[in-house]
Image (cartoon, rainbow, N blue to C red; front, top):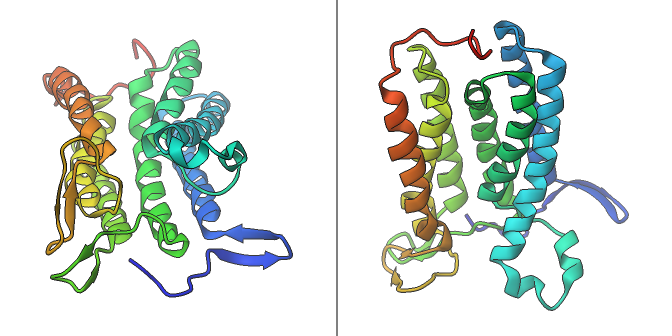
Length: 260
């Protein structure tokens, strides 16, 4: 969605200002941690240990998100390294990788089932996707391709927010059936990758790689970098993890403690 003269700041005093992008990232983190701690109390997990792991995972998730964004857009940063530490730009996949690795290293020491905790993280991930995509509108980022049939650009940011909303509703719907530990998270990775790759990435005005195709009438194009790596993600989450967990469906959900 393209707006005329959008204001990316909530407020600005001199050179200091609070941007909508940063605010939505912080808000989604806060809501995600709130839900995680609420579930920790219900499941009897050590809240202090979970909070420490969550905080460290969020910090390393931001580092991973920025690192992957810089690496995948290196031509933009190559001539001015200072830009690496300035401006917006985060990679969702980098955030997941950095956060998951950090959380796994910390949680395993506490004796908890990491898969159970990853499930509880899913609502926060969806909320973050919903809010950040809305902030992208004010930053005029994640722009859609121009489609002749629409006589305007695709509102790619709204498509992304809608994906997050659908997956959030799906999460709470599935919770009623007490899915086995890990199913919620890995099925989220699977469907997030499918929906983003097929819907959002197809209409985003991102650079295309390798053999590519663009249809100006419908405003679609492929393959983007995200679409190229999507089959690998689907293979891991869909085939390996979901097939492994399918046989556990219907069992009583563990408390999260190993052997519990």
